[in-house]
Image (cartoon, rainbow, N blue to C red):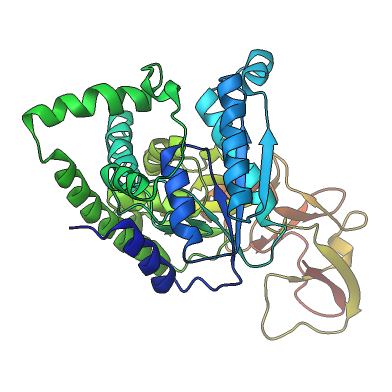
Length: 425
C-alpha cells in the first residue's frame, strides 16, 4: 500500500535532502493535481515560486484558472509568476502540434524562472495514473523499454513528488483539506491521444483485467531496473564525451536493442537514425551517415574496416604539413617516414607539398615498377574520411614521397652530401 500524500511529501523532502533554502519552481495549472501538491508541499517547505501558464485556449475559463492560482498563492504568501501565451493564435499562424508546443512553452518558462535562483528545482504534479497512461501511450507508439519505464521522481532538476500516489488519493486529500481547484473540461473531450487512453481505452481494458494498473506498475519497475543496468553498461564503455571514437563491430554485437537506444541517447543522436547506423557495418567501407541534430556533439558516423568511427564536431582537422630543407653531409643509420634524403641532381625544380590527386603515380622503394597513390592508400587501409587529406611531396616532374607512407626511389640519395627534407604536421 502506498503512503498517504502527507507522508509521501515528508518522505520526499527527507529522502532527497531538499534544503530549506532550495527554491522550488512549481507548475500550478489550477487543476486538482497541482493544487493538492501545492498545499501539501507548502506544509513542509516555504521556498516555493508558483508558476502558471495561461494558454488562452478556453477563453474565460483559462482566465479564471489564472485568477484562482494567483489568489491561492497570495493566501499562502508565495510569489506568483504567470506567462500568457495565445497558443491558438500561434498554431494558426505557425502550425505545429498543440501538445508539443504547450510543453515547450511550459518548460522554457519554468527554466527561465529557475535561472533566477542559484539553488532551485522544478516541481510538477504528475502522479501514478499519469505513469500508467504514459505506459500505454508509449507502447502504442512503439516506444522502447526506456520510454515505457515511465517518469522518475527526480530527473535531473525536475521533481515529481506524487508519482507514487494515485488519483484517488489526490481526491481524498482534496476533500480532507477542502482544497479549491478548477476542472479542465477539455480533459473530457476525446480529441487528444491521452484523453482517449484515459477515458476510453484503459477503462475498457480494466473491465476484463481489474488489476491491470498493478501489472503495469510492476512492469515499469522491471523496465526501470533494466534501463539503469543499460545506462551502467554504456558508462562502462568509457566514451570520451565530445571526442571522436571508434566502436568495434565485435563490441557492437554485444548490444541488445535497449542498450543500443541508451547508447544513442547518451550521444544525443536521434533514435530515428538507429536502424540505419546499426546497418552500417554491412555497408561498403567509407559510407557515412550525417548527424543533423544540433544538440549532438557528433557530426557523422563512418563505416571502416572493423569499426564505426564517430566523428566529433570538435575533431581537429588535418593541417597542411610544413616542410624544411637543409643540406647534410651524410645519411642517417635509421630512416623514418617524415625525413627524406634526396639527390639534388635528380630533382626537377623546387620540391613542394600538395594534396594528392587522382592519377598521381610513384615508384615506391621496394616495389618493382610504379603504383598509383590511390592504390597505396587502399592497400594501407586508409579510412575514406582521411583519404582526401593525404599529402605528397613533389617536384616539377614527379611524386617524391607520399607523406607518412612511402618514398619514391627515383630521387633518393645513396650518399652525402644531399638534401634533407623534413616534414612536420
